[in-house]
Length: 230
Image (cartoon, rainbow, N blue to C red):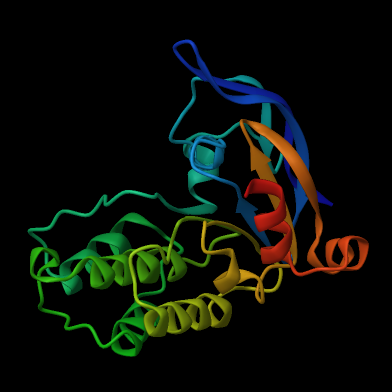
């Protein structure tokens, strides 16, 4: 059953059209890779699904409801830009999230903090960019959400840290949930995604299950990406 339904979606920024009439459905129990070059519409799409941008035309339904306060309760959204106050300590941020989201699992958050080798009393401003991204990932994945939306979750971390983050994402992802991951580091996430959507200039270029696309084109998803966009 489709839990996200997108019908004839358009999004513009002045005279620039970021999304051009996309229609697509997504069901639960899978990890979906949303990929494409810069300016392809990935972040615009995810902001709409996360209920952080209401200025669009067309229809977007999440469990039958338009994105808004209701859907934010079941969607855990990680934006592509920093959103956490750098004055706070890691433990303060975790406590804030625990008070704000009913589905937040504080024990899981502290377990991930330990996995990432981060100090509870360290302030965000004292952390590297990669460490800050780990904090953002653990906050997102510590919610017991029905939908997870991650926009470039591993762009600022080293290869070793990427593996740790991806492992934590898999381990904390419920089999019944839906996860949408946007990234330009397709080679890193190819092994974990079940379905991929290639966006190009606001339209869907190619989409389908990773297994079907590999069989159809006779190459890996990263190779297919390079062929289409390079």
